[in-house]
Length: 124
Image (cartoon, rainbow, N blue to C red; front, side, top):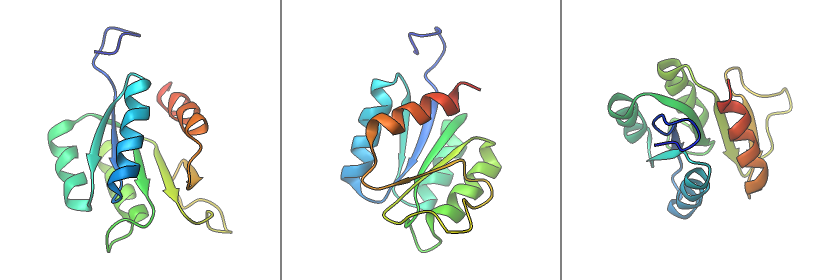
């Protein structure tokens, strides 16, 4: 339960193929009163959507899977209609964020900035 409003904690899909990074993201989300739903590949992400709905936010590693994290995240966004945050070792494309991506964080991610972004995106 989310102590802030008495409802179930919002679920955040964390698509990350590095287990240490995924663990840290999960801890941050827990501190914010959110439920992190880990997915280490695209199949796990799609299974999580089917079984853990509703997903209210997606945090994805841009370099995930053969398909690429951004493509997977956009597929997930189409299913969940939720905001998407990309994390990457690279800067965002020079032409700007891909359509459908709400925020881009360069790794290593500043946790305080990520917490602030998550709060803002979930306020709707």
